[in-house]
Length: 371
Image (cartoon, rainbow, N blue to C red):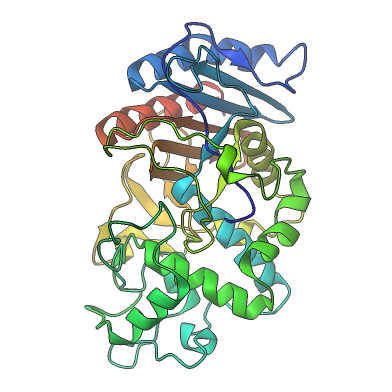
């Protein structure tokens, strides 16, 4: 998002975690005990320069930082350290979506064509792409339009002009709704439709419809030139933070403190509207294939942006979302009806490591849920 910049500055290890700047003097002893060893092990096994962990239990939360904000700076990250959310951005997008549904400004069954202006949206044997298809990764669209240009800044391509020029010429390989396959470009198109239905620029819709409800404190329009980007082992050079409004599927930034507040907002769902995004719309067994959803455990169903992981053994059912790339990997999950959730971000891109990290995060949630 062009209006919320927050690269987490993380790097190599300080053995003891730091607490969030605004954490209470006497945090929930249950959260403290549960996270004491578990958080440290998660960090050490990640191999990341640094990590931020936020845990929520009822009205209580604990935000911890591990390592360094930048390699060699000897500053431990905390709840105000800035980080890329990457694809966790998508579940902010669907919160805006359901707010418009609740007001009757759009319906999930609306065809994308309704919001396409003069462009022609492809269909498959007369089956159109709907907003629900886009929000559940089942619109028969690819993960990406193609390779980004070499000079493209992170999360700044494709632009709206790029994707709407590309879309009319794309041939759907199967009927929308039949197969779920993770799609970043699909969520960018969804944000375009939300913007058209809401009658405002997408960042303004996010600012007015989502963040006021849970006291988001990350500064708006922070100076991107002042940001430092953590090392990304997948790239030969550091990637600066830039205006990322072009890709509403992955451009949002935040802090551990704000993500703890947003977790509590989702867990409590005070007005019930978020139940629309947490509900299961695509059951795995009803799909012909499900591609790209199992990094945090086998996907049992898809909500609006959210991935539903079925209960197994002592682990409760989880509503979860992950994100990765451009220096960071992040994960958010909560147990609906159990008042427990977790957010974790590390400054290292490694998908094998991330699978182990999410497994440990899910196990930590299980320690806090006993009913």
